[in-house]
Amino acid sequence: MQLKSDELETLMSGKYVTIIENGTSNEKNLRKLRLPVDKLEAIYIWFDKSTNFCGR
Image 1 (tube, rainbow, N blue to C red):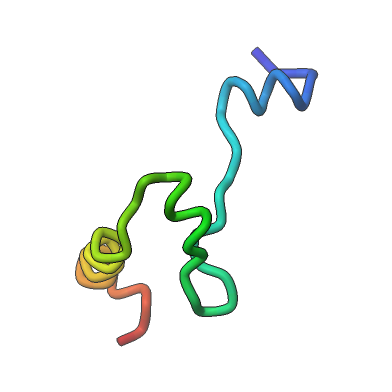
Image 2: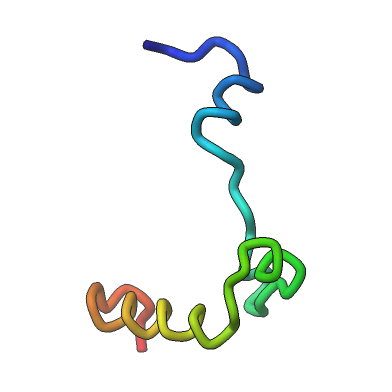
């Protein structure tokens, strides 16, 4: 089923939340998501190790 309404699509799939802007973490959005910085770092480290995408 294709969703015709942007509002309905947002309701069904949610909104994007930017947590990193210009290389720094967005503290306001991290608080909205209840995501502490240490968890964000752990996700980054896991992502870097699992995909080697971040180029370290």
